Structures are given as structure tokens and as C-alpha cells.
Image (cartoon, rainbow, N blue to C red; front, side, top):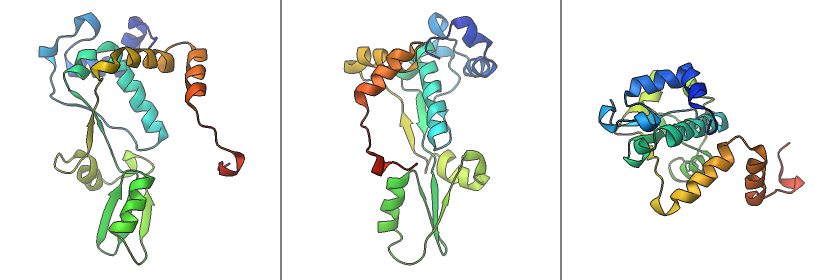
Length: 186
């Protein structure tokens, strides 16, 4: 996506619809005063596929609407991955670590039913509203580029999202921590 031409991006119906809905244009045609929304929230499933989609969308905004990020309008919703239930008591956990924390603090004893959401579409409307849509209860992460890391951020986006697979491979190889076979879940 980072390497896609303006014509290719314009031909993508979903991105074209998104750009039209925001009303502010892209690239050199971006007009902050025309932005129709105070918050643009990326909401994807809480799994690896959702993280991939979110990274593609953040890359689109970073490349085509960087001022949207710089002015603090881009957010990432944090939906739960688990629902824990014990009798009438329920809690939601955003990841495995949060689930373990809840099991130690909120549900200290007794049997706890743990349900894993496969995606946002699997949640009941009330659950989605309660956990991800309600401004009083939801968790939003504001997407930002730290000024001191702006150049490094641009390089990282290009290496990971650009059209050179060898740059992506090098980036990952330089930073990967490889597990031994005993630790792999195959």
C-alpha cells in the first residue's frame, strides 16, 4: 500500500469511499478544514488479521493524509478478544495478558467460562456497544508520530510496507527473536 500509485489507490473502491466520506481529500489536495469528523476510528478484529488490516489503513493515512495524524484525528479502537463469565459477573479482556490479569484479580476462585471472539461480527450488538463503541467504556489509542522519530518512522514504513520485499525481510531479520523448537506451537 505504501508503494501504490495515486491511480491505483483511487481505483480501490473502499479507499475511494473512505476518502469521500471524510471529505478532506488526500495528498496535496488535503484540506483539514473540510474533515467531516473529529475522530476517525479504525476498528478491526482483535486478532492478527485485524492487526494487519489496521496497519494497512494506518499506512494509507500516513502516506495520503499525514496531517490527519499530526492533528490528532486518527484513532485505533481496542476491542476485546475474550469474554470471561462467572455467574452474573462478566468482564472483557483485550489480550491473553489482560485475561490472565482478570483471572487473578476479578475471578480469583471458582469456574470461569472463557469465550474467545473470532471477530467483531461475532459479538452481539450490545456487547460491541458496551466494549468498543460506548465513549464512556471503550479504549481508543491515538495514532501519533513522535517528532523526534519522524525520519525513522518514514524509513520503517517504507521498509515494512513498501514494494521491496528484501527490505522487509532485512528489517524483520534484524529484529526477530527466534524461538527454539521446544517453544514452538506447531
